[in-house]
Image 1 (cartoon, rainbow, N blue to C red):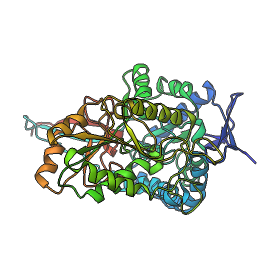
Image 2 (cartoon, rainbow, N blue to C red):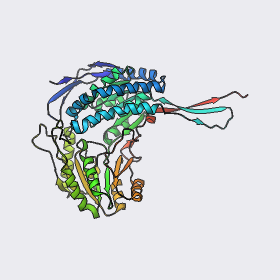
Image 3 (cartoon, rainbow, N blue to C red):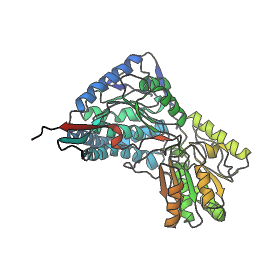
Image 4 (tube, rainbow, N blue to C red):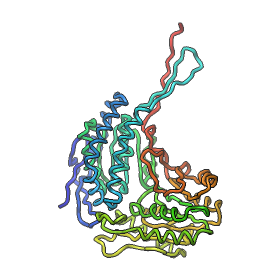
Length: 478
């Protein structure tokens, strides 16, 4: 029986004041799993107004009081991990045992980390030119944030904003996609139980129209967005001069050099391409292999691909589930067809799998001899595909890695420390990983795109959620 969900607005569970609902089916089973109300303009106004009241209250709390609140959330979070993970698997498709449990558990870590970070968020005393002048800085909350979050990590990514946001005294109105909001709304019960001020967090699922109404709202001070570069451009064009964090698309290059540990590189590359069915902004989207180790690497990658087990994501043996939605599956179809038409060779997989409840189950695919100008090389595929490109030498490998508008996270495999720094110094990417997958991730890692790319800006650290205020005193002369 399908669930009927409610919105979280101003600390209350409500059906909202609108007349419409979204109906959502599972990518795992194809069955109707829930309905959720579509918010009205009045609902958005109410959420933003409540957020304003909450941030005005919390800005006067001490850092230790806000840290205590975050720790209460963290403790309550631990009690719901497995239940929420089951919902996450059903609505998103990621494997319950292999991914969803850890995904939900790590999402709660943002509150523990923020609680510690905010207690160490200090200003500075600045020297002045006048004997009677004193100058120092303090951190203030920005105010009301609109957080527009994606469907691939529907619990974790909202918490990247909510954890540090609440710790610094901000209030947030979160807009997840309507088709992956159940797990988030279920876990949001901890905010009410933990005594988070009413209005400090509201959750209003919906599509682009709801998102646009939020980011253009006069009562919103800042926008946090995680999603595609295309949507990000639209947000930037309409939000005005609001503060923003924009974490957008990647097509993470992984470079395998001649002195690399080939077996390790192959295993990491395959993992980085199939984790969450490739629906990760830091997935291994391009594999650039130096020509002299090409054949050796291909053999190792094909062997590593034997460990990918596509299936029912609730089965313990499954480590890759279905894609989440039809548009991303259709994009995979286009990218594979284009690559093959341009001369790429399918070594493993290649297309949708049969015999499953929906047509969103996609076979893990390895493509070899992929042309650099193909769609799968130039765009973010967001699916379980590992495209292998070649390079004659280190210089050409850097050139291939950088010939893209995307620069989020890259990786290089080498056993030469000097060569590792050669690549790190030259690859235009927000993060460069050495000897591990592009999917390498820590919840406290400074993370974001490189300047000059379509990947965005902001490092998603606690300072991003603060205004730095300078205070100057002029003292009486003695």
